[in-house]
Length: 306
Ligand code: SF4
Image (cartoon, rainbow, N blue to C red; front, side, top):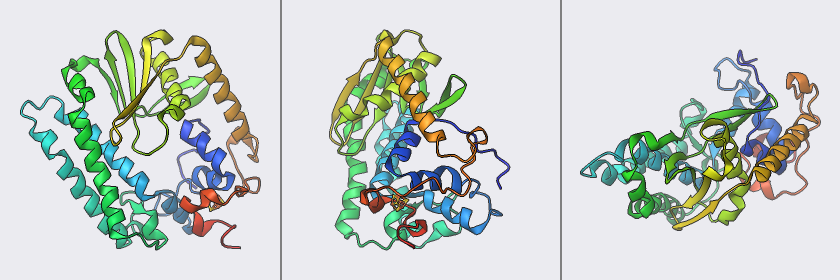
């Protein structure tokens, strides 16, 4: 049992996990809790290790985020652009190292610090050109970002316009902790502008609810006025952006959405007050097998290991 209490909180990614598959949600938020500790029981440690796996697409997205974070924190004020020019090489070197470690199974010995890839864990045959395309997407995202008007505008902003870069934050909703990690928040043209980087192929308009949660965070942290908030989903791979604004009514609807989602999540718990899921008997496998194709818990799931 971990010394750190597993307190119930809400986030958009937790909501999505719950909606995708209850069993997967149970593994990720309950059964793997404390598995980062070396002394944890083997089953908990194994579930924690599986939880830390990424598919190659998630891995590429993560590295694109890291590279942009590096640019925003270090290269923005670099007058001759040397740091920005070296950013892609730096990131690709890191990806190469992680790829080799993952292929060698190094994550098994240190799941806290060494990332592992889903494709290696489950011995999926991925052609070399597909791995190359995955890495190329990160290079392309960086190249496009550095050539974008957005990067030019961000570099022109004063230091105190930067409110948050990849910082995990939370606000309270009726006492419930709601976590959010906006990629970037700046004050720009009299507004609080929230940016979220997307690197997949999804329609950017789908991200309106997720960015709405960041808008709620913004009303808690930086401005009480919804009309002063703009949220932008930005895809540097496809060079697309979509902006969202939220009225006071929209934000109230989002608060209701969070309350309902949290109630739903608490319902299957054995003891909701203690956030205790027991042995997870109320958490069934998803009806559809579609989410299993990229589920890190395949080797632990009763559906596939009866
Ligand atoms: S393998 Fe499928 S059913 Fe099992 S936890 Fe994962 S998504 Fe759910």
